[in-house]
Image 1 (cartoon, one colour):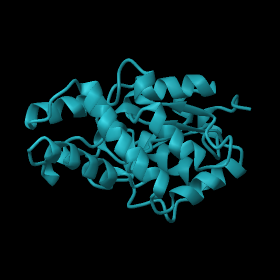
Image 2 (cartoon, one colour):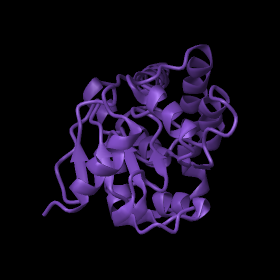
Image 3 (tube, rainbow, N blue to C red):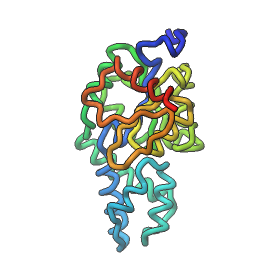
Length: 230
């Protein structure tokens, strides 16, 4: 099914989706949970401080919180506290990003394999997986499954390998510079959908304002146009 050369494709061999900020608008959940943890320790956590964590591996974000606040514990303990609160909020309401759910549904209907590639841990990714029809994601790669998190290429290379596809024949969807850097470094044509933070322009990346008007048939044209940009 995936033997067609990349240049001859009408649809990508697979679509590799970031989660937080791309499929679901959970960044406000993360920021509120971070603030609650810091304030419980007697500190303050600004919006600017929260923005510096967007797209990071969770342990790195926890290290920054420990460095910049009176919170105590290990990075893993901080991650558990914050992620537990985000999961609780997601179970109460999944905050879909505009256009993401309809595009995901269209890709599934067209039998284009989709993978979830997130720095959230599996326990949180499963909240999203369970909110969707069974089999929506053919592979799930989370921050606790890889040795090197984004912006390292390992997460996207792992997803492509699990799907059995050439990274260069896939399309990645990302909302952060860290995530976009990971996908581009893995050789995946990438579409950036900036949300809370700016994504700098770079070769192999195209930026769009949102996914509301993007259809499955648009993805390959958009992404490969970026891949040819110099």
